[in-house]
Length: 513
Picture 1 (cartoon, rainbow, N blue to C red):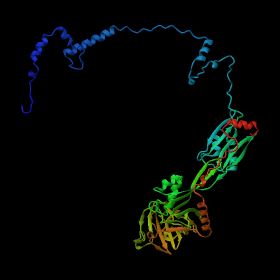
Picture 2 (cartoon, one colour):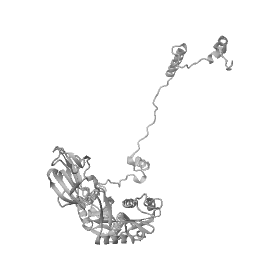
Picture 3 (tube, rainbow, N blue to C red):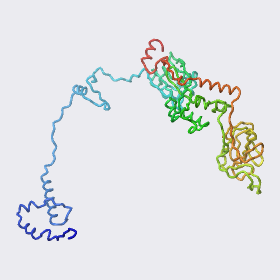
């Protein structure tokens, strides 16, 4: 064929008649070898071969059951019981888990000299360390440590004489030594107490007779500010961190200078950062890093930016070296509701005719807070015609704002308010169809469109305040970079070393306690 293929019939491939003839010529051995004694009982069910396999299986099972020898117990000789002496000898040499009351070892065997105790003896003293938690009280901490409530309150009152209890920072560790109690039902008395009450003060108390004597140990503290200065390079943050500035101080530094210049585009790689933070070192070796004090940027050897935190009229803000404070601009939103009516002519919803709407209306739920949009002084606070409950603020330079239809007024005439301060609450007093805020803006006494004015204010230092401000800058910038890190010889804390009974015992032997 063209496809090189051939086909054969089954009779041509396997000569059936010849195979059958060959099978008849096989002997009985060959036939027995070809016999399947274990046919698959899951195949050809009901055939002669299947029945033969079932019979074989039944025969094998019957043979196994018939030849089963059975189970009979084996007799074992008993172990003679040990007498008392042999038992004690064996118990002293065996190994028993402690959880099961093990008392192994020959020396533990009971003898006639062993007598049961009527009660167990108590430790003469207990040493422990307690930690003051956040929101915890000093007296409650002592009570949890095992001190009686009366003595704990007396100790708290005694410590409060040296330092206000509120000044003891959470996390302060208190070392205690509790003495022997008179009876098991009574709390242990305090034999000694020691703690670092403040960064510059350690308190120690020792029992002398029936009372605790307190000793204040002042700790000398170096308050030289930590000044860190270096080149900006590729990243101001990474460079400042590499120079040793704390992460929180760098974040504060970036926020301060970010209000004056663009951190991303106005700072050059060759500029130098100048960071000064509050820093304290104790003579005992501890140190504390505080808040950012000064933020400066140097370009070409000259100060491009010099910022210092200063307090004016009870408000803390950052001022430039010239005495000009940070800019506070943008008119704050008087409430969080949406604008429902704008400035201009409209048909009055109650009077029914067109007239000038001299402000903006803000929707809001009844009782929602109303905020002052800028710093100012309350000129009017009370009932005011169709405005209902009305507040008017004077912001200086001929500017003022009014807030009408309040449900309740939260300020009084003559009061000074700050931007964002709550001055009242939304209501529906006066000519109003529902709870909302009517907000007006005045320029030289005339109402103007509130959306046309943006307040921008800058604090300015003058006179003595400016002189003090500049003197503070000179004092901070006179500190050499890294001067606060100069090694100082650590000093060991004086007084008893609580936490060691040997120390207390030695002091007691010498008459110190």
